[in-house]
Every structure is written in C-alpha cells, then in structure tokens.
Length: 105
Image (spheres, rainbow, N blue to C red):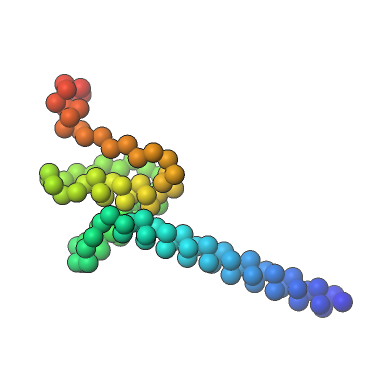
C-alpha cells in the first residue's frame, strides 16, 4: 500500500514539474507573440533589437528610448511594455519634444 501511494505521489510530482515547464514555455511563446506582433524584420541587427527588448522587458525599471525621427521608437516601447510584467496596465507614450516645445523642463 505504501509503495502504491509513493508511486502516485512520485507521478503527481513529475506532473507538477512538467506543468511548470509548460507554463514557462507558454510564457516565453506569449512574449514572442507580443514582441513580433508589430515589429518586422529578420536581419541580425533586428534580432539584436528583439533580444534587447526581451532583456529590458524582464527588468523592473524605467526605459528611455532614443533615436532619430522615423526610427519607430514607439513600436519598440510598445514591444517592451507588451513583453513586460506591466503588459496588463496602460501604455502611455510621451513625446518629449512636445513637452520641451511647451517650455516645460
């Protein structure tokens, strides 16, 4: 009887471990979906940006994205937001040039 119960407990533990692995894989795949929904590209530089987004999104920090006009900074910001733990919250884009133009420092 004890052997049978031990076998069932062992099987249950293996199932729990397998379920955790599946959850982690699902989380990673969801991040991939969120990341690649709006950004497009397959070059090595684009993949470097994707990797940087993944790394930054995992951190609890503020991110400043800089770049020339037309470089799609807001898409990168959205990808960071959507891949982060804050994805369920609002995304607020701030155009710093507009704030500076208003004389707010």
